[in-house]
Length: 370
Image (cartoon, rainbow, N blue to C red; front, side, top):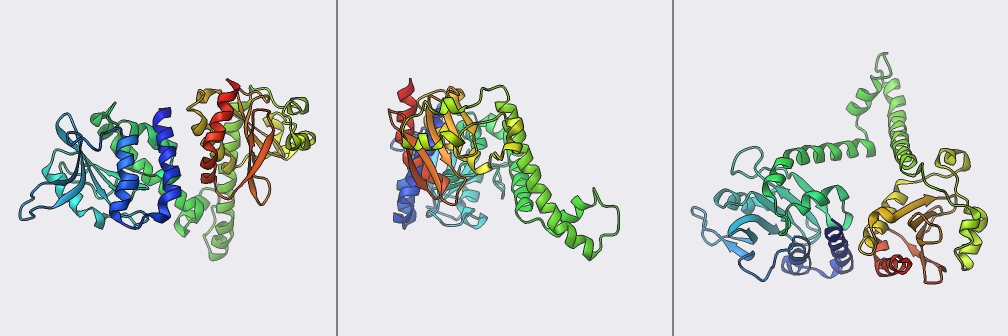
C-alpha cells in the first residue's frame, strides 16, 4: 500500500502549508476533503455517478436537508460524508444529519471530518442506526500507520465493505483501549495506580503508599515502554552488520569528516554500555522518511542504525548509501540531507512534520543510488 501512504503524506503536507489560510467550511471541503475523496479514496469527485455533493434525501418532515457528500459504488450510496471547518472539534453533536441520513439510505459507512481529523461510523450496536462512537479515527497530519490497511479497504479500487464491517468492532474497541492506555501512560489516575500497585504491594494502601506509587508507577511505565522499543530494535537489527569508522569515512564532506571520530556503531546488545539510546522520536522520524522514499525504492531496503552522535537511515543497510541522518541528541533537532557527492547538509527542524518539507530531496537521494 505504498501509494495510499504516499498520497496521505502528500495531503498532510498540503494541510500543514494551507491550514492557516482556510477560514470556512466550504474552503475546507475544497482544499482538503475533496482531495481526500479523490486522491486517497480514488473516487472521481466530478462524476455524479461516484460522488454527489450536497446530497439530498427527504426525511419525514425534514425536507431538503443536505449531506455534504454521498459516495456511490455499484449504483448504491455506500458512504456519507459530513464536513466541518478545519480545526473545529468533531463531536457527536456535529453528526445529527449523518444520523438521520444513515437511517434512510443504504450507506453503512458515515464519515465526520474537519479535513484533517476523520471519524468513521457504522451500525455495530443497532442495525441501520449509526453508532455514537466511531470505529475508526485518525488525523491526516499525524497519521498512525495502523489505520492505512483499513482505509485501503474503502478505496474505489478494492472497496470491500464486508471486510470493513467485519473488522469494525475490533477496530472500535482496540482504538478505545489504546486511547485509554495512552491517557494512563501520560497521567495515570488514582484507580490505575492502585490497580498496578496492588500487583506488587500487599499492604494497606494508605495515603503514604499512594504518594509513593504515584511517582513509581509512571516511572516504571515509561521504562517498560523504552525497554519494549529497544527489544524490538535488537530483534530487527541483531543480524545486521554495523557501521564502523572506516565505513563512515566513505561519506565525504566536512560534516561527515567531523563525525568520523564519534560515529562507530556497536552491536545493539552493547548499546546501553556505550551510551546509545534509540528514542521513540527517532523511530517515528525514521518511519516518516521510510514512507517518503518508498515511492522510489522498496520499503524493505530502507534500514536504520543508531550511533552516539546521530541516527542513520540507509539504503540496503549500506553506509555508502546514506539517505538521511537524524541529529536529535541536542536541544535543536537537525535532519542531515545528502547530495550526489554524499556531502551532508544539516537542516533545522522543530517538529517531525517538517521532515515532509524535504520529501523531494530525500526521494532524489534514494533514487540516485539506484
